[in-house]
Amino acid sequence: MLTTEFRITNNVSNAEYQIAQLFNVIEMSKAESGSGDEGVEILKNEPYDDGVHQGQYTLKMYHLGSRLPSWLTAVLPAGSTTCKEEAWNAFPYCKTVITNEYMDKSFSVTIETMHVDNDRGKLENALNLPPEKLKDRKVVKIDVAKDAKSYYLQTFNAEKEDVTLYRSEKAQRGPLQGDWAATCDPVMTCYKVVSIEFVWWGLQTKTEEYMMAVERDLFTKFHRELFCSLDKWHGLTMDDIRRLETEAKEELNLKIQIRKAQQAMKAKK
Image 1 (cartoon, rainbow, N blue to C red):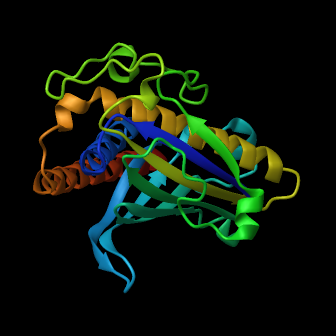
Image 2 (cartoon, rainbow, N blue to C red):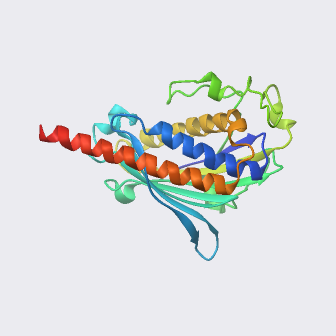
Image 3 (cartoon, helix red, strand yellow):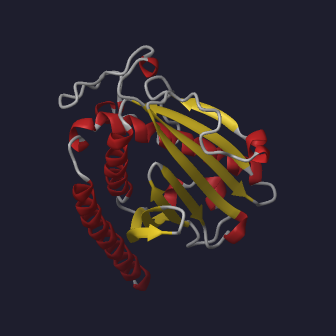
């Protein structure tokens, strides 16, 4: 198992981040559901209460298709490139678990996040990890203004991602330049502990390292877009977000059903 704690500081408050995160998850899901064999299917989005936390539970199916590396798809059977994502969002604490039916207990990605207001990434154990996990944990700080462009996504949309140029008209923030994370106000930090397990002889180390690099890229891209979309989500309420989530669920699931129908038609020919 590979464990890394990512620390991402943002020029927003915790209250703003909660709205911004949900808004950008909706936008990301739409963008990921293009043509071909890829897309996001939202099966559940409902309140939960487990006796310890109260929040929103979501269940999604990610149809990864060609997004997986060729060396991995070569050993996976047809139809096994779909992953299940369960998320328990009890902000400021969130937990996400990603699994694959074919790999069963041999594969999992667990992401535990604590969002800390008025914080610049200095907490040594924000998620209260036990000693044995702290010993194996690697800490990586992500600076959305300085980190290298994503090798995994291979594209850099300057308009949507260049925080060094973006200026919010509504909030009068940005651009993020120089030592911005040490001086910006408001400020908060996301502490994300990612644990990846891929038990497959000959592929475990390579796959776990690859997937951790993917997570780093996704976190970097997501938080760049979160800041550069500030004028789009600033002022939205949680009621607005729930309405947008319902609309997105209907839209994405319709795309998936149309794609499945088209694939079925091709198979008959």
